[in-house]
Image (cartoon, rainbow, N blue to C red; front, side, top):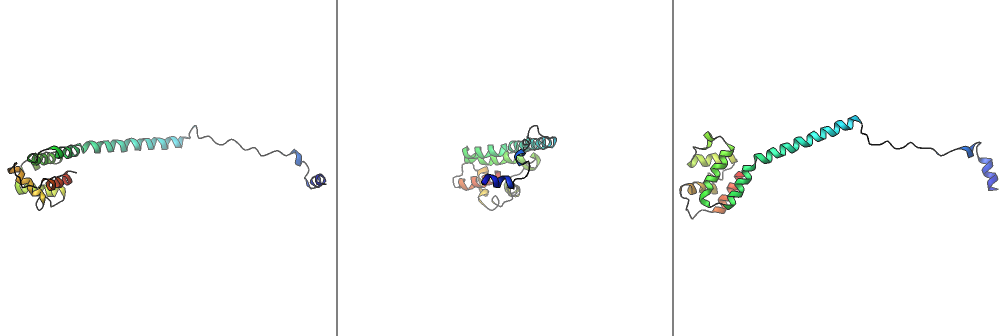
Length: 150
């Protein structure tokens, strides 16, 4: 009876129908021209950003060297190190002749701080004129210089 019911309810030609055939998915390769343009732009951006990062890293080499040297030099050599770092950044005419309070004011202005004229950075002058001074808090002074260099 079931076969008879199926035959009665089926449309003519039902047994001649086939499954739907789907086309193959579209391949990603070869890429369309627009994708090549996007890849080229991305590659150029990566190259440009890498070059900019390298230039910035190279430009700040003096900072890294100064911070390494600050850790290993004697307190008597600290004023010369600060002067050399300043000469790396600013024109010789502006830095080389400075001394005393004018030197400390310049360091404060350059570092946007008051640590040299009103803080532990004042000991830099004492070290400049008395390299064997014993009453200088070296840790505080090197901390101020690290902040100024870094």
